[in-house]
Length: 418
Image (cartoon, rainbow, N blue to C red; front, side, top):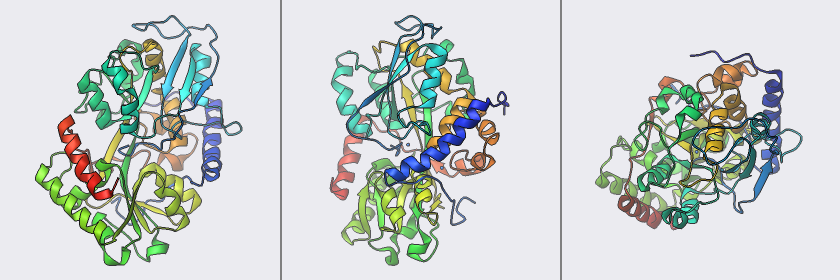
């Protein structure tokens, strides 16, 4: 693994600031921020994929300075702007001014490219519905960079609605972790680059339920009736349901999915499963309103700052692994600037800065060493820097075509009542 350059003292300050600010900021929202791996199961948005926010308010970060910007196949000269849509709480925030995002500010200072940053992605399907008609008509959607989960990224690839990345503008793509270099929906990473990755497992409070949890099948024990929530994201919940039956979610048959759906339906009808949620399970877990939840790794890290008793378990049967990906929509007006940003965040020191705040898996080789210079504990966190052994016990969900997607979702929605 390549050693990064010596850590800039400014980065040391930013990393410390990010961690402290994240705790305070998340608490102000009724969340939290850290993790304890529990249950010995480690022996891991969306996907979940980040937490989303309604409203889509945009924030402009930085002012063009006229300094040298990106070059290549984009439609603008040096400087200019970048219109970037992301999920909420998915980039570092300044300790003293929560309207400032240090990574975006540094990018502007170094390139002269002003970033118009929008936290307007709340759910993959919801965002897809907003942009579908424009993309289908070959129109510019007003964004140069968007972040969507693997399966939705795959759909945009299939429809031909993305611009190919000019990799000569992104030399730092060489820092992409080898495990993420080849994915079924984008074999050569010509159209996507991972933003962050995460794992779906189980968050629980042993003080509430009075024992440890080792896997998904434990969530069906009678003593947990009414104390368990599952995710409203089909791939996360059903991926774990399939794994609990010893079935690989990435290669399963439809009949196996149907059988897993029926088991879930029985659990819902009996009252075993209390609710299906988005990120809101995190607040209930931290408050002790529930005992256990199918959960996203980063959310559980957040929840533990609020309640240190909470633990995260990678299920014995296996966890779901997912990535949220940076994508350049077709007809984006500032393509080269999007590529310049991709290159910027694939510097190990910048990737470390982001990972220290969001607490998800960074896709950038060398970021672990950069964080270790500041906080050795973070560098050893398996939820940010999972070992090969941990990753060996994770799954992707099977790639579905549009018709399969509709069928799978209809069955799932019929159970969760959405």
